[in-house]
Length: 320
Image (cartoon, rainbow, N blue to C red; front, side, top):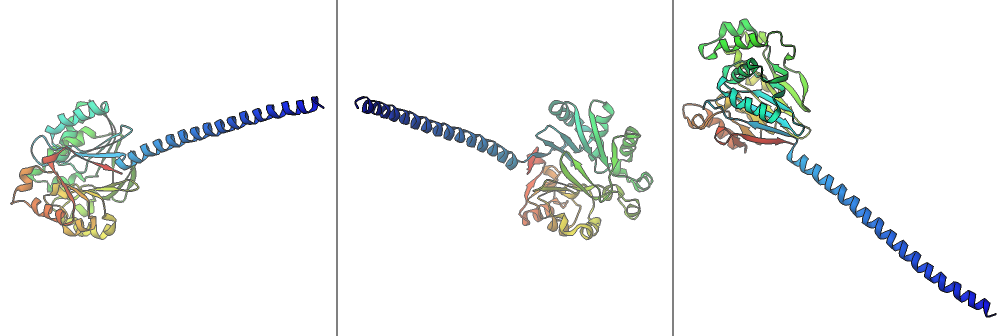
């Protein structure tokens, strides 16, 4: 009898001890799983937060540079987090030095794509200089299919046709050069590039200024934002652009037509309705009452657009 109860008593005490230990283990296990869950959640939130910040800041940086000449020009670069580089035009021959420094020092002498909107010296001068030097590797060159005879027949002294002839000599037979036409769509380092206007021989045979009016109008866009580049296409093409694209012109950012001193009429800019506008001119031209840059600036102010120009360059936006 004593053995029975004693055994039972001993088993009960041991059993209670085991239950306490098991409970503690379960509690410790739950605490460990909870802590691990918190750690995983924190890691997930950290990654999500990083991705959010990257998304918020935008993958693509568009930078406007001022010409070292103190004159109007068109000099833009587009970069992304992977280190790709796109150059748009590049300015005068004198701008080659600053552009070459950017390409060499920040991108190891490599350009993924170079877009040339039209062959005026304030747009292709630096390209000619850099290309001729052989110091830079360029994967792709995109430009417009200029009709040599049409341009030559109508070229004025200020066109500096010889700069275009130099471009033709330098790039003749270049396998990686593409002549883009209106309606083409391509991938540009992950950006959607849509060509809204290009050099059409039949159309340009009817205008006085085929080099400017035959320039490339294109839009670059992500899934959320876009920037429209109007190059130097003149006001006379406004009806055509409106009829062809209408509401599709809407863009978050715009490079002003002909540097903001001419190019495209008010109706086009109203359709674009940008948040920010880029004038490719220095302070003196912006303030010169003999020019219409002041009128264009007033128009952009009325549309609520933030203004960028050479006085604050380099000017940078992020395409989200």
